[in-house]
Image 1 (tube, one colour):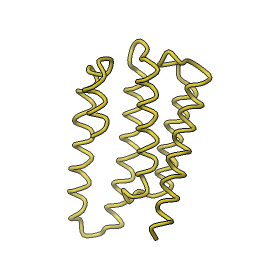
Image 2 (cartoon, helix red, strand yellow):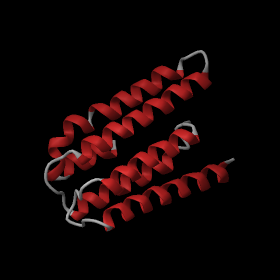
Image 3 (cartoon, one colour):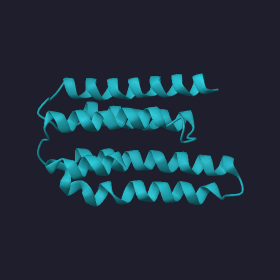
Image 4 (cartoon, helix red, strand yellow):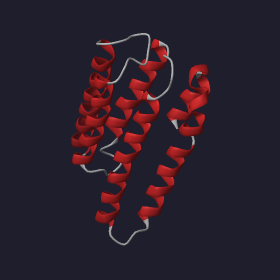
Length: 146
């Protein structure tokens, strides 16, 4: 939902609404459908795999955009990556799939061309920092609530 709000509020990302709206809706519907599955372990595994596919598609679409985005847009998207990493523990995904998703995001950021006015080498550093901070906050909160 934060993706949709960001895409609506930022003129640079309005073209991405075609991707920003359906994918989170599909993910929520898929998770809701899996909730009624007989085996919750199997449902958790399927959701984890679909989440990794979603992350792969998301970063592929984001990095295939033509042109550059502003620094504010880039930083907002990295805040969303951090929130996603923090929330991953609550969404019942396996840690191995969480790490795979983070590795895909980090590798794409490191090996792609710059997508914002910030440029390299700061973009990959900010991306990796957001992922690490999000994972740390998520794991800390998860352990504190147990």
